[in-house]
Image (cartoon, rainbow, N blue to C red; front, side):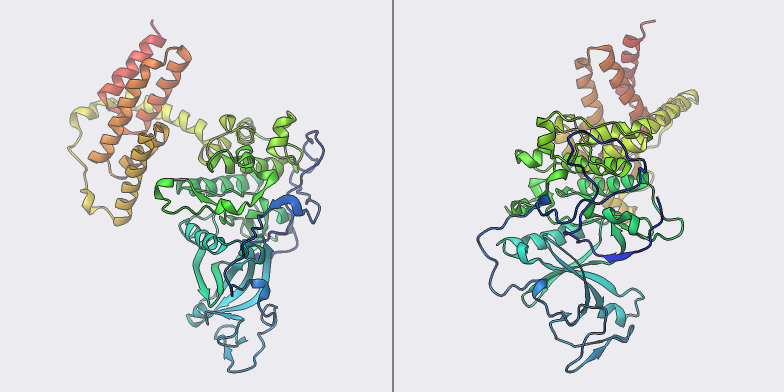
Length: 514
């Protein structure tokens, strides 16, 4: 990709900016001659994002960012009328208790962007300046004028801040706080240098930091996988909600309409999805039909579309919605010039029907990066080496119990262990043994020979014993044997479990009678 000549500051909101190129032509467009080029959509595509406009108005006295005085929203010093203050770092003046100073702490400097959910301003944090912080800048998001007309908009903004604060990942925008100053409700976020994915060519990257398409896709998948693991579906993943910093870091923006997947921990009835915001060309079939709860596969569909566009410069279904593409029988043209496993991952992500689509961002990341295939090969090698060195002699000499008592582990390790055990049990209860196995194995790795981790792994073995008789075809039996071999290669408890070893030997005998 060619270097760009500019960089802009961003906070995570630029709703009126167009995004990656799509085509209205029904015929799927072949990859462009310059794959990295991302031609923009025509400006002013107002029907791109649907935003409900309920008749009910917000509570009286609720101002929006659009109503703020403008004297402090340019790059000049804030005008001073009475009782001026001065920033100890920049020397700029400000008026305490004025409408341009939020909570007597944040001095508004300039507007960064406007979208359906609000307006975002660049601001100086006076507390940081007083502490001689060399980066006193934050972004402040105010309730948008259209968004504020919804009677539950305030609740939604609070949820956005709360859910975003729960996400601490290098590929997710950091949200600091949610608060109000009089009748102005806002949230503060980290300030970013760079541009949205649609403006990738405008970013002046630091030397050696310009990411390639593969890196961008893997970072997006990593951020989504983390959010999904924490029970959040983005529900409006699109290029405008992907920010790329000047050091090549992807930041996923605006979990504003993300909804909590686990209803067991959702204690009230408000669903931000009631606001009706979605971007049609990136919405999954199930989102368009509104016939199911939010699912990680919804985000995977949008991720696959973006990945396709990064390589080809075109939408795989000619810019049409998933529903139109299904009705018209459209098929995406394979991407040339990428690895086979990368194309298989993207093709699985953009499958129109959820039953045929990659179910999670974590699985997409494994398939796209080739991790699954490498792990299988590595586990097979480990298993062979373990068997050749008499590894099963460990059973007779293994120590009793954990080497380090659980109470002596660092608090962070204890918390992580408990989280893995709880998630493993929850996965087992709903029959998700793939997830349960990962969590129990991860818990065992944190505290080897821990009784709770071993009990979880015994549950896994019992499940495999029960499911083995249902595997009647050679292909099914081969799959089950490879799965159990992989478990044994990854975890010492499973490698030395006699019941599992007997089951593996039985399957091998069936598959190779000689």
